[in-house]
Length: 409
Image 1 (cartoon, rainbow, N blue to C red):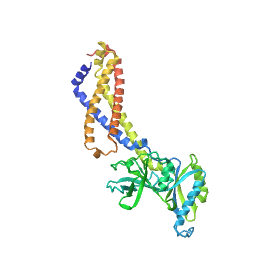
Image 2: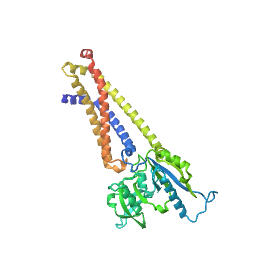
Image 3: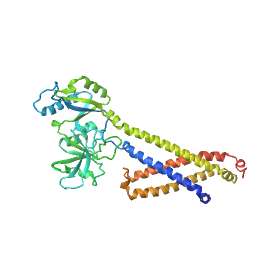
Image 4: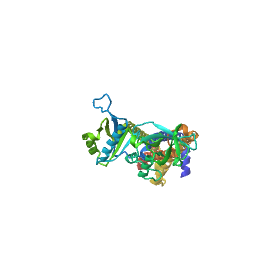
């Protein structure tokens, strides 16, 4: 039966060539869209490196000297002391767990503040590049930063308090093993005047839920006694609204002399505004994929329906000579899947020759095994479409009585 199938396909090679070309185009189109979609959504399946739930943002500001509310202070140190006092008051609020001061510490802001670390003693020339987040030690607790080596939260806090930095294990530009940097002395760029020690390796703090590729993460300690910047506040679960009401009503939480806090906003709201355009684009991708799959499957259904209508008499003859419906259906299905295999082999040979020849030129941000997995998903989708497209026309064709099917022969 297999020999007869191959012989029949060879005799009908002209029609099969056009169907193979159609399947090649279908596979290639779905494969490309699957890759593009996965690139945009891979971050959703990857740890963010932080916990944005129940986190609020505040900005620290000062009253200008021109204002009638301005109070003359003895020195600039009073500003740092006043901000520290305000933070202490916020910590005393029953709804608050922890507070931190930061520069570029929160995600969802697309800040490109980066630094390159170089080993101090080895005098290496290939640096470790990361997105620098300058923070006070309690940042670890507020944002839920986790160690990749088993260090506890308190240990990470103490490392920052001792003046050590934390780096992530993800750095596509760095050729070495980031874990080997732990405990090493490093400098930032060409500034050899400041030597710091790498305390631990942490989970990368990504800039949003979707982005993966931009830089690693460097957590840089900020002096708690002379710290100034934005505030990040972690409240107890379910108490966000209560804290917002307390902050609104109690001026002692908002202002001390010339220092005042403003712009209270939930990190979840910042995330929603930041990612709105990305999610709009993704919905467009989903619509495109749905429309493409529907068009493809309708096209396959029409193509195979037409092919099977031309073979109604052939199916009838096979039934007359004793072939069972299951045998006829397996033959029809085998032909469709065999044509798909030929199309996939040709497409794979062309595309993988391009990918493996110059993988960096393709630069789609995916490892080769992920591209291969997406190709497998594409083949499965098309195969399911072929099976569905063949099942209904084949069922209708086999339901015709042989005498009716071959009366015109």
